[in-house]
Length: 168
Ligand SMILES: CC(C)(COP(=O)(O)OP(=O)(O)OC[C@H]1O[C@@H](n2cnc3c(N)ncnc32)[C@H](O)[C@@H]1OP(=O)(O)O)[C@@H](O)C(=O)NCCC(=O)NCCS
Image 1 (tube, helix red, strand yellow):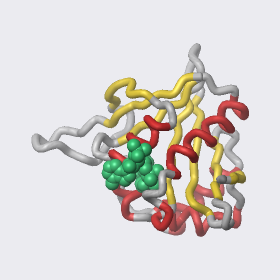
Image 2 (cartoon, helix red, strand yellow):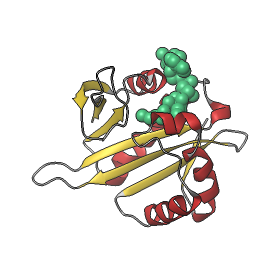
Image 3 (cartoon, protein in one colour):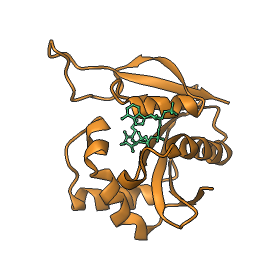
Image 4 (cartoon, helix red, strand yellow):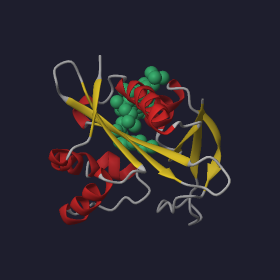
């Protein structure tokens, strides 16, 4: 069984390692490596941001296996947009943990923010992520150009990402 806690200042180094994991950078919309300075400023800000929810998950052996993050953006006259992001520690991948983290994380987010919908933006080639989100009850809603994707197709055009949606 997985347990969770909200991220703490002492997790800064752990998050730094996870954020700079090559696959995580590759699957992020800004794929450039992150400096420790940039990370420290970002992480410190997020820990006190009421619109950010950072959850660290651990396995029964007490190892930190991954993180799920929710970011909330108020949208005029509409329910807030809540965006989920996830990464699994490189040594813990391929064990089917991702869908569990997503499901548990969404339940916590729903309670915390009274969420009615959660959005996931995923690069089309990220099959592991797509499968994990589908297993956790997300459904494809369409393509989105919301995030400036540095990836280009054969014609040099920006590639859209996929928007997956979970509603409650
Ligand atoms: C995406 C990520 C969270 C998935 O976690 P994971 O531990 O690798 O995947 P899981 O073992 O939970 O498997 C999830 C599903 O993807 C499948 N899968 C795993 N690796 C795969 C691969 N390389 N290609 C295709 N499918 C794959 C699994 O078979 C499983 O499918 P199933 O449920 O139908 O059996 C993890 O790979 C990761 O942290 N990647 C880097 C960061 C990232 O991409 N985050 C998501 C951004 S949207």
